[in-house]
Image (cartoon, rainbow, N blue to C red; front, top):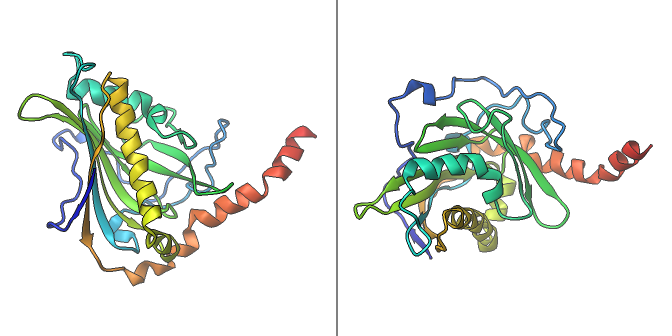
Length: 257
């Protein structure tokens, strides 16, 4: 179920802010070592972080949540156990056809994860996210320059007034450049992005023995486009990802020789 409204903006906030150790230290640029698991680091290495304030397109706040209640839900479900499982199994909860290369040290403040997501046809977009905050009830990811979206997304769990544990993902996002914003003009592109996180939340629920339908709320926070960031297109992962796809046969030949 999806609803679209326009209340005042509310940036996603982690559940707790008192623990300084839960925050990542400030970094100027992301520094990654080459990996051997197939993750493409070149689209992230050397990039700055870029949140929704540095994006191009209209700003959206999207909230996805599932209620972990029902026949399969056990008494052992708590916000802490939900987040612990989410951190541990994050790649498994992603929809099929997309890959989350978890940080080698796990989802901890300051760690960088790499992504490979389907973009239609043979092209896959290779990018990443940095863990900017993580405690036992939430964690927040932030995108680097060149990512499809300039965004923060916070994953959290809490108890409702009736005692039911709710798992939630909340994103504050803009498309990063004019090309991605052009794609977002088509409802199918926006719906694909929303459905990605809906399927993720439903997978989290199934992990806890619950068959749930994700509740989705989409809010247009700012209808303006930030033309001063139109130049972000020069850093887009779309170009490097397309080149990586086009040169795949050469890499296969090189490995076989």
